[in-house]
Amino acid sequence: MKKRAVYWLVAVFAVSVLSGCAAPEDKTVSIIQLTDPQLNFYSTPESFEKDVTTFTRAIAAANRLNPDFVIVTGDLVNTPFDAEQIKEYNRIGGLLKPTIPLYNLPGNHDVGNAPTAEDISAYNEAFGADYYTIEQDGLFAVVLNSLYLHHPEHVMDKARDQETWLEAKLAEAQQKKDKNVVVFLHHSLFLNRSDEADEYFNIPTETRMRYLELFKKYGVSHVFSGHYHRNAFGTYDGMEMVTSGPVGQPLGDDPSGLRIINISGGNIRHQYFPLDSLPEDIHLAETN
Image (cartoon, rainbow, N blue to C red; front, side, top):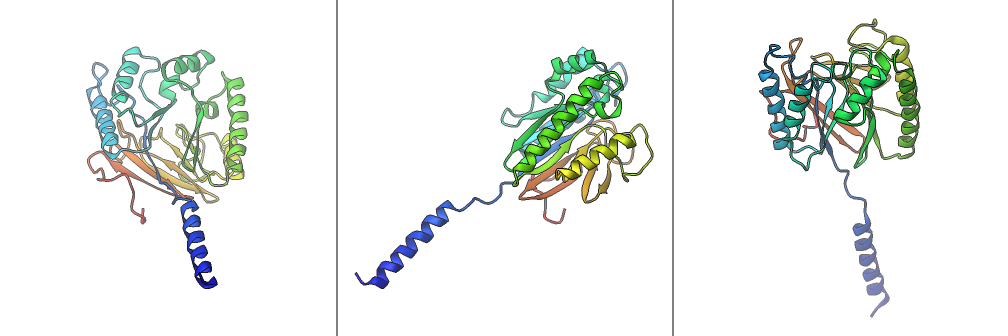
C-alpha cells in the first residue's frame, strides 16, 4: 500500500475516534416552578376546593410537559402545620409522575412569619429538609429557607448555619466551571430595585445586600422566588431577581399560573404562563 493511502486511512480513523469522543451537546434542564399553592387561601375557610383545583391543574400540566423536576417555592399550605391542608398538599403532589422529582421549600405560611426551632422541626417532619442543593446536567441549584433571612430572630443559630453552609456550597459550585448557579427561595431579595424600601414582600436591606454580594461573588445568575402572588422582575449587576405569580390565589393582575425555566450551556430562559394559556412544549423559544 502506498504511503499516501496509509496516511489517509490513519487520518480517517483519527477523525472517527475524535468524533466519538467529542463532548455531547449541552442538555437542556427544564424546570417548572410553582409557588404559593397555599391551600385554603383562595377559598372560604370551610372549603379549599378552588385551591385544590388550581394546584391539581398545575400538576397535570407538569405531567404533560414532563420537566426534569418541579419545585414549589413556598407557602404550600395556608395555615402552618394544619394536618388536613398538609395531607391534601401531599395527595395532590403525589399525582406527579414518579419519574418527575418534586422539591419543596418553606414559606411563611408553612412555618410562620417568625419561626421557632420547633416550627422548623415540624416543617422538616412534614416536608423534609428546609435547605439543600439540586445538581443536574450542568445545573447547580441552591434551595434556601428565606425565613432565616426575613425573620430569623428566634432561630439565629439555624440562620447562621444556613449562611455558613450556603457559602461553602457556592464555593463548591464555583469550582465546577460548567455549572449554571441559581437560587430558589420564598421571599424575593427585592421586587424591582435592589435599593427599594423594606416591606413585607422583600428581604430587609442589610441582609439583602449581604446576600446579593455573596451571590455576585460566586457567580449566581438567577434568583427565583414567590411570596408576592404576582410577577415582578429586577436585576443587580446582571443577576436576575425573578418573582413568580402564584399557582393559587393572585393578589394582582397576573392570573394563577406556573413558570417554565430552561437551562443549558450557560443560557437560562424563563417565562410565566397562566394556567389557561399553557404551552404545548416545555422548551421555550429562543426569543423568550
